[in-house]
Image (cartoon, rainbow, N blue to C red):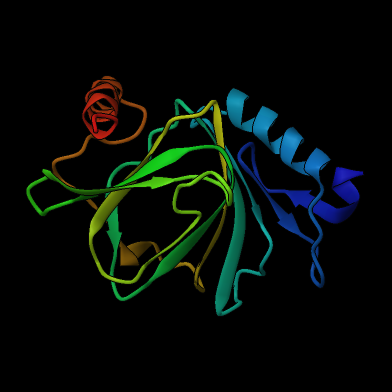
Length: 174
């Protein structure tokens, strides 16, 4: 049934067929399972078409995912938490934690919606086994508009694992 509404895009994503999109709890369960087995520990539905001016995604991220701290040039992004808990961590240009926002679904007592409208380094530290977010940003996607922090290691390296371990400890302190 998934293939009828969504077309695969590698091991970490699928695209909605053009037109209206609908997502069920079973879809999310399938994507959470896929996130847990993917190399980067995440899976996303791209509900938009690549040329759309607004990009909407449902993203499932396993607790062990590493999102290299980055900023977006001249582009905002918003997150609505569907399920799970995380800390949205902001850094100064030297890599020191500047601010942390505790995120969770509506009713959790945490922030359930956040819009980042400025160019500031940020990442997520996922606290629950999985985090599911509805993310919206401007399209079309332009990789040159994402700047990765030079002080943060690249994904898939042993240094990234160590960085994330240390960041998790620091970010989760009150």
